[in-house]
Image (cartoon, rainbow, N blue to C red; front, side):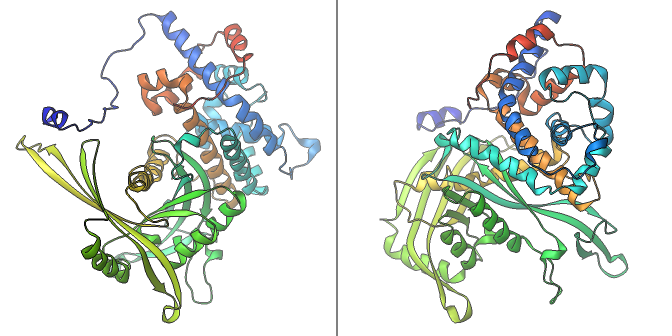
Length: 483
């Protein structure tokens, strides 16, 4: 099958699976050097950005008694941030591991601001009393800095930064822990019971090279629901709040929103256009019946002219589209949006694991586009932008199952819980930058993205560092170059 694909000119996507091999280091000296180099390169990459983050943290008013302070607010926040960077599993775990003498000595060499390690209870109490939304402002300041430095300019699509929105449940309990938690009824009859849960809507930059950059978070809460009609908050309501905040934070930045089928409606399209954002929204078969009827009618006339075929990787693709479809909505159809529909049908071959025979697979995708579709832009809008909405779903999997403890309740206080979440998202951003940095590319190829973080944490936890070598290297500023 591979030979036939090569003969037909299909490009075979390279595999990124880590090799199944023994350690690449033959001696203790070689491993020691590698561990020092990895930590130094990470610290050189992060230090300029951490200094900016600390400057933003310093702007947060400290509600504590200044005469009794042992740790300044930026230091406590840095401690919380690093506990997520190095993926401590809980407050108890961070207290134990980060206060160990070897770990403390090593981390202070890399980040001298952390002269001593606070207790996690100190961080929890502080987060419960400050405006934790200012943590997200520090996050946004870092993203703006990266944009000004043009770190993502080569990954823009149609002149826009691709942004995906998606929601996920953060945690669930059988009893309410705060009045902000949402409520639902599950089960039937004798098994019927109430559940209380926290749900978040996230926005992230999702690029075609697989890099996903956390951007903003909106928490769903009871106070944002409609108490008069006893309707709780929902993802769509949260979308409008998050869209407004995103526009205020980036008033002139061009975005292309990549949205799933939940958002295929007139008000969402209107909000995007009001914000001067482009969009690519998944169009499901049972959504917007009138749009589908117009598309199918136009295709009978435009099938040959609005059609494009190409090979992409191992897949043969056929695109069909119809532009300028009028969609009416609202009371008596008084409101109207112009939609452009594109449908992708693709085929590829796989080996059946039972029969070991080559079988042909089929898939079909459809999107609503804010801009007209042509042969010149259909690949970029669909393959390089819209299809990479999955990046935010992968990001949820990473946060839940690869060390960031997305579903762990670090605090039952609503404000503190949000603060821990914002620190986690900021730490994820810093780790993603390191995982896609050229300076650490060799370590990522050896250990994988998750393995790199484990490698760095293990190095900090043992007496591997050569302090003179580390200090000498850290004196030379680093520069972030993304792969």
